[in-house]
Image 1 (cartoon, helix red, strand yellow):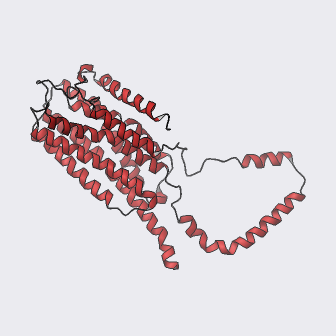
Image 2 (cartoon, one colour):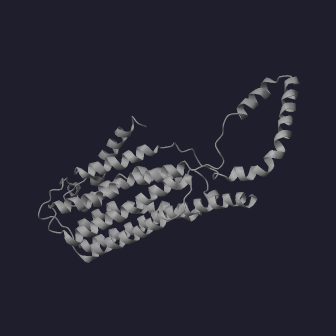
Image 3 (cartoon, helix red, strand yellow):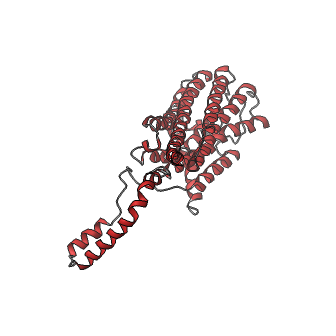
Amino acid sequence: WAGATLPILVFILLFSRAFPPLTAAFSGPALYTNAWFKYEPSVRFDSSVMTWGTDYIIAGVMGYLTFLIARVPTEPHGRVLQATSVLLIGSYSLSTLAGAFSHQFLPGHLNSAVFRFMWRLCVGCVAAGGGFMGGAATELANMPLEPPGTEATESDSSSSDDDEAGSCEEEELAASRADEPQDPEQDAAEEASDVPTRNPALNFELPPVPQFFWVSYSLFFTLMNAIGFFSMKQPACDIFLVGVTQAPPTIYLTLALYARKSWAVYHVHRRARRILLFGELVNIALLPAYDVMNFLQMPLGVTNVCLHTTLLISWGAQGLGLLWFLKGIHKTASLCETPKVKSE
């Protein structure tokens, strides 16, 4: 992964710049023209309460979800999942807070240092969010198929009684096999049975993606945003470009959720997986929808209310799904510890 990280990131960077213009069927590719944070006086940047008010609402809801996620008691195998979840949902809150401030106080000052800082912060949080999402996906993918402690709890009561008998039976079985005539077909069948098979708890095997890749992911796209690579002549378009960079971690998170048949062993209801998947995918519609609304010259306030409502639903579903996963993991760990407490 170390050697492949930079080429992969560069490919995603170029794709995120090339793909959005292809979706601008009505407004045309010129909608996505680089500005490098130098804006023309004719640029439309809304200052209505419909825009910054809905931004503040999203920031508040995401901030509250971040608080709820952060206060869930965690176990060692769930701490990184909790940290990446806090960073992901918290970055959404900070992004919309910076966006609300910009829309409320900075229209007409787009070329000021303050606006450039606040807009870098607004877009940069979303740019970093892809790495946070991928980090959460890696933790889910690496979660043990059986919660830590369950096997030991079930086997403690019987292992001490069976060890001696088991060892004797194994010795007798080995001796009897040594006296039997060798059957080539039987040997071949036994060798075939020794070939590892897929765990029945899995739908498919998911290759692991290391956490350092996702850390590099966040840092790389945050840097690209800071230097102006995602800066378009219409500031709203910046968000759509960095949104495309979340496609690979979104796909990986989807695979991590459905690589195993069920999360019931962690007391995670299927609705948590469904709402998390819904939260990942619902905002896909924003890219073509913005093209249509821009082409129709809809009032910016109305356009932003539509976009922000979709983001609130999408990001809120992501936060709620991650919260339910963390609560389920904690409940499982608590139940695993109960027998040990009673035995003491």
